[in-house]
Amino acid sequence: MGLRMGIRSRLGDLFLGLMGFLFFVCLSVVLVLNLRCIYYFDIDYLDLEAQTGYSEELIRENYDVLIDYNLLLKGVDKLEFPDFPMSDEAEIHFKEVKRIFVAIQILFVVSGIVVLILLCRKLPRREYGGLKLISLLTFAVPIVLGVCAMLDWESFFVRFHELFFQNDYWLFDPITDPVILILPDTFFAHCAAAILLFLFLGGILTGGAYRLLRRKCLKSEKNVPDSNGIV
Image (cartoon, rainbow, N blue to C red; front, side, top):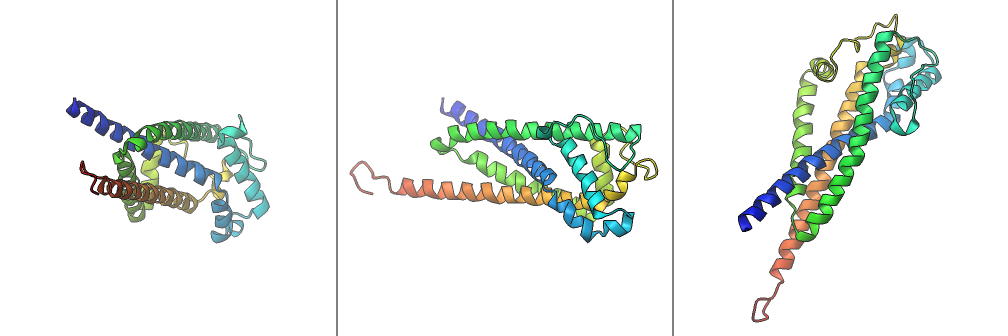
């Protein structure tokens, strides 16, 4: 019976670890998707006005339309840029991107609920292995992906698109789809860096929680009196 309970506990920790990692991945993506200040910073940092010939107001307005289209709570069904034409291929690509973002937003809520339920069950029983696994995953993955991206961002960017899209519609022609001019690769690199940073912070948070709870647990065990009433 003890062995069976131990196996169940370890499997539960593994499931919590994976769900917690999924939660932090989705949370990081959702945060970056909503943090428009990253793009607003890049308008000046990358000098997009000079690079594209468009005003900052126009660039912001069209970017905001794109973001609103991808936000589940906004409920925007059709993407229509105020100032840019859009080819059929680009429209298909943006629909594919939206499906991914919507799925991530749904997974963010679902995984968050699952993690909360599991923590409410495990923490009172002093089962902290799941927190440790979440921390390890959210530390390790950003480091590995971050190194790959820094070594060759262009290849990383291409492999990412090949993984998630089954066509080449993401290769925009600026003549038919000028919106690509206001979406430089460097901006996506900054978004990727922000996502990895949030993941890393998630690892720090869960790792700190694990250490704190373990320390309290060990301290309370030392203070438990023995059968003679001696601490």
